[in-house]
Length: 258
Image (tube, rainbow, N blue to C red):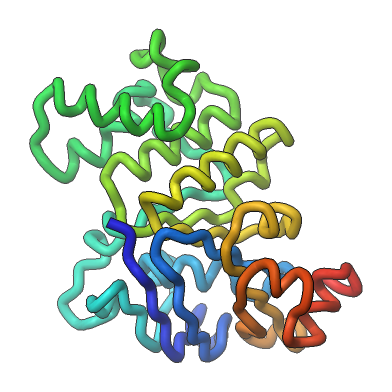
């Protein structure tokens, strides 16, 4: 079930270095929120704080509050692994499990998290490969390695793997940056379909992509190299791209810097 994310006063660090400063925002359920901004402004770091991946980085720590509906994800006693099951992630480069078949890639999380009959697994694998618009391309080679697929197919396989465990939120960190234009379009179409089931947050350097796929857009920036990234503004995507409230947003979108 898609859930709302409320983030309050969030700071993230790498050792003594503060990477992002005092971020507060709400991400609405069943919507796509895009993070845009120049390289090094903390977009991906911030994305990784939402599912507690940031603290896996050596020296990574977080201050502030991340609420998933009524649950405080950083409260004492909350298991980070369970958070990552609830908030799935798709990375920049497709990363199917190289020794596993296409079928087992999709079923991997299910086998870890519960006991399913073979027929239940078959149904869930087919449903999520169909959901990733991949079923017709792979249904006759489910036992073949996932690593044998094209880059665009591998990324859709990774999305099927992430959705199979029915997360509440799907995070995507530049999911199209390693893909050709046709594969990129397929992923964008897929994102549009998936938002009826999930709350989706995507980091992208492609502003046309942000304009195409997202309902809301958040612009991040940093005042100088080495300074922490800040959220400059977040609003409906149409407003951000046509009439932003902050001059820096307009400068970035119009290509004056970044």
